[in-house]
Image (tube, rainbow, N blue to C red; front, side, top):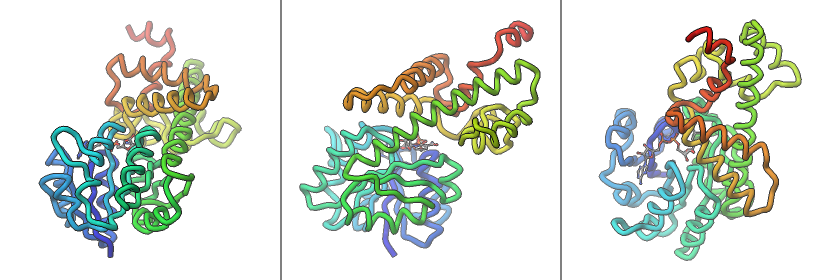
Length: 305
Ligand code: NAD
């Protein structure tokens, strides 16, 4: 059984690492926030005093961090710390599951390759529910041999594991997906709100649209209207789930990628503007489906006031 260092135990990383522990792997964990390690050590994971401590002697390093700057600093080092690439043992497989810019993923892969290390960018789709259930989709970039090695450990945390192409390809595929997700969430929100403004029951409207041509993932799995789906973040005051700030980050990445490739992405561009405004109004740490509130009927607001 492989031994794994898991670094970054937030909304996604903690349940992912928990699934590795439950699968019987030896898991060493580290997060900058020490409390984040507690739920994992209760399950049997080994806590570490630093990222360098966590990776000592393991077969696989997995990271689940907020953004590109965190990933670059951790793997390549900064003014204060050595990079993990410098300290891991020969033959260690590096897997970064964070959603970051493809350029950073390619840079980490290049430096790792120069040191003789295999490296995979493996961003995920499926949200916190998928992380808990072990049904995530992993979207990988890297060499065939790195991908084949990564598949084994990723299989304990996910149901679908794709090889999108060379280093960075996983990140490009991931932001294509998240740009589409934002557009689906916005369209679903405005459609539901228009129905509600006309007196429709959002439960009934959702059932109709789910099996009609408007059916989509947001309606089926993540309804943005409170009290339609008891387990969705919308029914829990938009707590947990996928933060607006992270969606803003991903939409920024998608627009950078669009510029680099001269792609026309008007829907993605509009989605980014709408999510940036939502974040500016103080919703950054709420779930991204809270964008639903931006489409509340004007008359309803006046009536409430
Ligand atoms: P999060 O902010 O909840 O967790 C990030 C964790 O990383 C935090 O606990 C933080 O303390 C830790 N961290 C940051 N820098 C660190 C370092 N140098 N060393 C150790 N720990 C460090 O974020 P999240 O929701 O878990 O998302 C993580 C990544 O997964 C992001 O890139 C996000 O875009 C992506 N993602 C999130 C979701 C979701 O639904 N939340 C879904 C798909 C992808």
